[in-house]
Image (cartoon, rainbow, N blue to C red; front, side, top):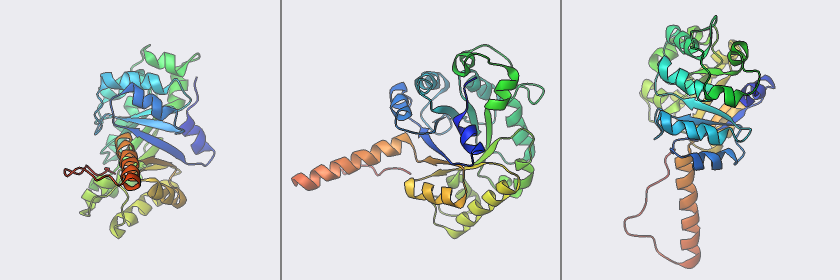
Length: 269
């Protein structure tokens, strides 16, 4: 079976640099896959991608050595199993608030006897390659729970000791909302940063790899130095917007042209 880069980097004690795909395009997914990321996550929760749009994106990513993952819209076994059958090597699931919800995620990601995933020969056989097996899939596919709710903060130990759970992933925006603090992709609020550190400390205590979404390279570096082992750097939409703004600004400054009166949107982090 094809190896999972994320697992391999974690085993070596390193940090995964993960890209985030919100644009429903196999072309942009292919371009991102050739940009040097360790893994790419298709965002079906908040991105503009639906299931049928995700399949050609999985195909584009898997033409490279980059590991494809998906953030599903909810902790629902149907969409989780379909994404795995389409060739996702990992599931990031939002809004996990309890051990029971974490166990349901694991159940949908793993075949019996660990979980309840239904066995079928779909694109997973193509992606993972010769030797695909129940045990191999259980050992390869990642079940990752997002920590971002008030319930999750109260149940960190219970969630992180869920049998079969492979990692956790912090969503800083919803985490800030849960704490009643300002929303930011790269938070500076001390209350939010304190919880980000506490989540990591709990994960370390349970030997649980921890990931986090970030609003840009600077905060991603900060989180890696703190000890997070997977960082996502904003999204393809924000990166495209920011790169366009920087290029336009350079041309306007160099040529003396003026910006249109309507202005433009700021890059979202």
